[in-house]
Amino acid sequence: MKRFLLHRILLLLPTLFGAVTLVFILIHAVPGDPVEAMLGETASSADKAALARELGLDQPVLTQYIRFLGDLAKGDLGRSLYNQGSVSALIATRIPATLELTLAAMAIALLIAFPLGILAARRRGSGADRFALLFSLFGLAVPNFWLGPLLMIAFSIQLGWLPVSGRGGAAHLLLPALTLGMAMAAILTRMIRSGLIETMHEDYIRTARAKGLDERRVWLKHALRNSLISVVTIVGLQFGALLAGSIVTESIFSWPGIGRLTLQAIQTRDYPLVQGCVLTIAFSYLAVNLATDIIYRIIDPRITYED
Image (cartoon, rainbow, N blue to C red; front, side, top):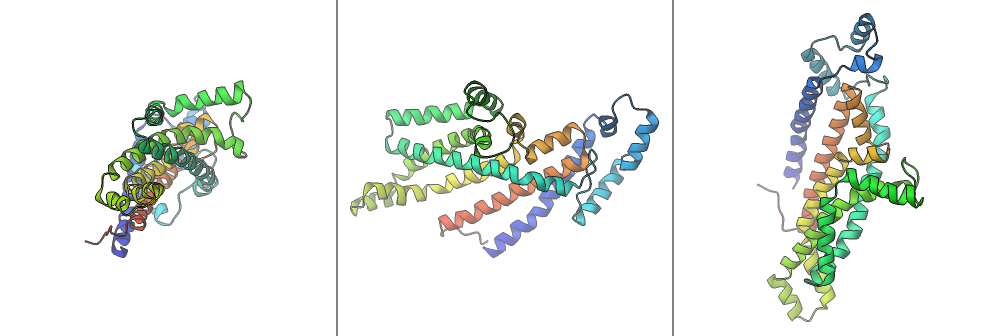
């Protein structure tokens, strides 16, 4: 296990290097000038040249890339071109909001998916099972950019129950978390249902029933635990996806997270900030995947990572 963890941690470095390099190339290849975005199209050529020289954008792209890597090796993500603040500080102020939204969305997804998935598996073919499958289909078919405004119109504008946007208390968190959590709940519901149905045909389930164990204990202790590997895989992947893919939801609800910060950085062609946000997102995704592998071993000690 220790060798596996060391190997995975060492693999983080080239993966992060590749992600940052790719983003550096793409953000410089995309049409648009950060100097023009800051000064406006009506600014004089002399002012644009002076600002580009001050920001180091007049240098060749390769020189800028080497300088960026040198700063990164020192733990310095640079300074934002748009507001001249530290990229690390800007990201650090946004991470708590994104983490709060991600955990809330995950909690909503789990609270919906586990009861509904277990109920659908236990009553296969019933009305509850058909409802679970319909919910799963609906959750997967409805995109966030449609569900978010719909929830906002219904619960904020029409009913006035919840705030429209921004970050505050639990009321501000509910709608964006529900928007993010619905798709995950749909996936998990289907996975839990199919995993339980498949597990219930295993020999150890028949043995447990033959020993006279309570049916509820058979389902929850034996069947559910042994079907959790696939569920943990989906949870790990989706958790990383939530951290990385909440840009649309954060923009809809004006949630001050790292996703919205990334979008703002792209719009202003703020190269250092875009690179810092992508590096943070990539690192969080890889860290979640590593944690998922560790949880595998906790759930099933028979799993080994030794060569």
